[in-house]
Amino acid sequence: MKGVVLMKKRMLALTALFLLLAAMLFSCSKRDVSISYGEDGSYTGFSDIPSAYTAADAIRDGCLVIDTLRGTSEAAGYENWQRFFARAESGENAFLRVAHFIDGIGYYRDLYYCNGRYTIFDFNEFGISEGESYRYLRRLDGYAGPASAPKQDCYYVLTDSMALTYRDVSWSFLSSSLDSVTTIPFEWLGFMIYFE
Image 1 (cartoon, one colour):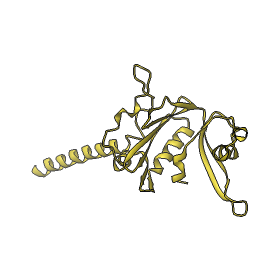
Image 2 (spheres, rainbow, N blue to C red):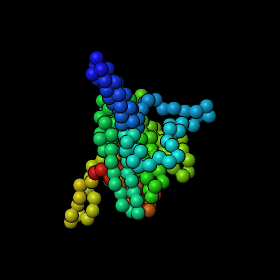
Image 3 (tube, rainbow, N blue to C red):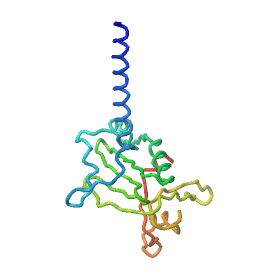
Image 4 (cartoon, one colour):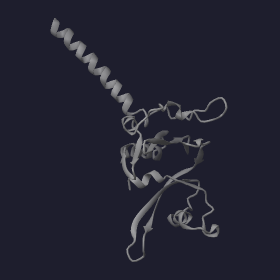
């Protein structure tokens, strides 16, 4: 009889531990996918970030994490990006938080795919952005570097255009002349350079 009671207690404890770990693991990548706004119309999604949040916390929470310390960067959570991308591609609502820590200071991007649109919000020293919404998440492939030794490269961008090219994005980064910069709006997902 004592053995049965002990077994039930162990099973209950293991079940509670499993549920706690599952909740922690998927809190960044599997949170409520609807975009939340306050009464004043501002985005409230970053309100769940504690003041002493660290890269280790973000990794544990299932975020896509870049940790830059003294110029050296480490990245984790690529599987969370893959999960987000696959869900969005299949038409399911999806959420991903990107947490970039630079010398311990956190900069955040919340990326949603809801109701057929990608929406991105930033949280940094300037505050919380109003959010930008786009129709497509596109991977643009091309070549970078000298013509004598070009290197395969890609950009992930949010845009409303299927006409935007790798070259358009490259020139917008490199050109000082506004005449040669694309007029097609896009949002570069620069965090992906740590994974490609």
